[in-house]
Image (cartoon, rainbow, N blue to C red; front, side, top):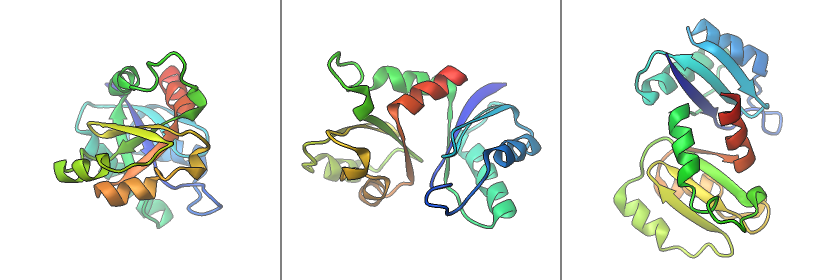
Length: 178
């Protein structure tokens, strides 16, 4: 069995697309996943599954959520071992003076197209900063995340991929819980 993290986008925000975490846990168990744990109401699920492509697992979960709740929820799955590598690769986290409360991680559904990467990397988004490594966007926000240009919508439009963001403390907590 392999330990995975499923990150759901856009549930329980502003009273829309509500899914109770207890119900989400039950859904994952019904899908045959083991050792299911949820963390906070924004759709973070840690679980065990037979090793297979994260895309396939994401599709199964997305389909099950649509069938049960009647709305689409983008789901991005990553192996927990990969999340540990992602943490180690964060170029902002490695700087001693970095305020961790300013760090965020945007998970991308897939690696963006090379031309899209060139375009977005040429943009000036100061005073905020970002680095794209593989299918992750590391964010350093000089202020609140809600005030940055680097929102999910911005990144999805510029990169033409689905995305969802978690603050750095949540990313660290998810690995700890796994």
